Image (tube, rainbow, N blue to C red; front, side, top):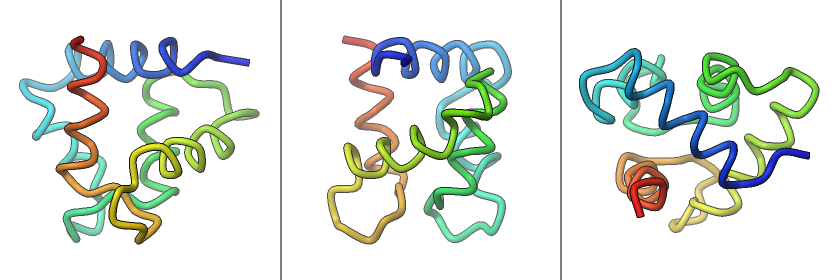
Length: 89
């Protein structure tokens, strides 16, 4: 199983290589424009970050569990930024 650090590093590589800023990446994956990433939108981000399909759904759920501070089962910009900031530490 991939570690949390490995997953976050793959997301960081995706953002660094394909987007100018984390905000641009968030907006790109927020397909419905509601300012939040759903489990499906997170799965698409993970696919782009080259996380295998077998574990993508599980990892999406775990990321939501770990970073969804307001309990709405979605990741908003502030919660996404927490994950990005954790990568940089």
